[in-house]
Image 1 (cartoon, rainbow, N blue to C red):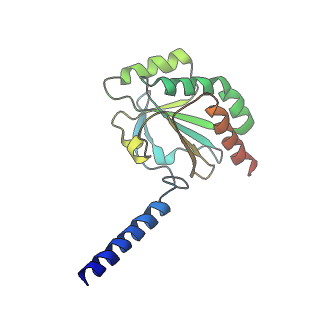
Image 2: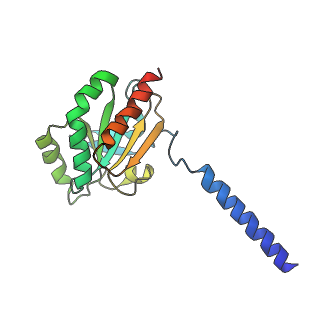
Image 3: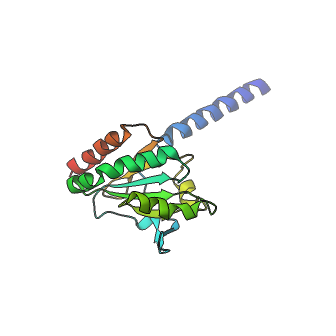
Amino acid sequence: MKNLSLLISTVFLMFTANSFAQGNDKGLLEKSIPEVQLKNTVGDVINTAKLHNDGKPMIISFWATWCTPCKKELNTIHDLYIDWQDETGVRLVAVSIDDNKTASRVVPYVDSKSWEYEILLDPNGDFKRAMGVNNVPHTFLIDGNGKIVYSHNNYAPGDEYELYDHVLELTEEK
């Protein structure tokens, strides 16, 4: 009888854990941007939950100055960004996860590349943790209603076109 109870308990726990895992399979997808207070490069405090793009898509890209794939991704997107904005109105917010030791490199790097993105600083990793980012680069696409609809981790050449296809899908839905 004891073994039967143990078996039933084990099966119940496995079923519950499996159901929970499947229910959370999407992670943050279809959720709103979490609220975290960050600073931009001039020291203004920005509430991340209030980031928006007037009903148009928005890209949030987590990066760091020490991350070569991050810089490749954002530099590649920079070459296309003006066209993307003209065609879709998309906005890109680049969130640096550089800590206090490397944060002083952010502004010089961004200035040297003439990025037109809004840059936010997350030196304590609060926003990174709230968004479930484990490693960078990590890119999220937010729809015009403020919901996270796409997430991509890492970078390989050509990923920017896949991202833009998702942006186009959002603008064509309107």
